[in-house]
Image (cartoon, rainbow over all chains, first blue to last red; front, top):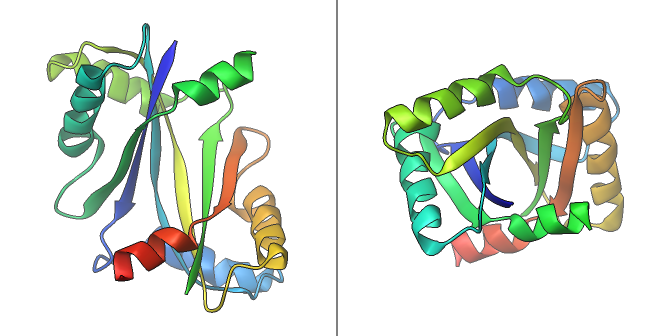
Length: 90
Length: 90
């Protein structure tokens, strides 16, 4: 079974209230090492067969049309993660 | 400037309504290649200096205590992504 991983992050110029909440909470829990946090999304798309270049292209199109809002978000990466699945099942 | 990327996904046995919504919407948009979708979170933690092993350890602890709910979510990875930042700024 194949898997495609799509990563989506808010654009740098867009306010990210979830990230702001995390960056405010970190020092209260003793984590003072981090100066900023942005929160985005990670999708795992399961494919029944192998991840072919066509499927990767379809995933790339789905990433920009359905999985992200191009006005406020960037698609960071669309990658074939089938190797990870195989490693877990081995 | 350094960056640590933390990836969090819902545990396999936990119902993922966001993923279910996406998997229902994909065929309506013509994407019939995907049999399942899970939606998780991706955090970018900014660090002022370099990402040292200590900072990576702190990020790992923050990932399990603040960035994820260990009852329903798994921390998939905590990685030093400083090279990506450098590549973008180069």
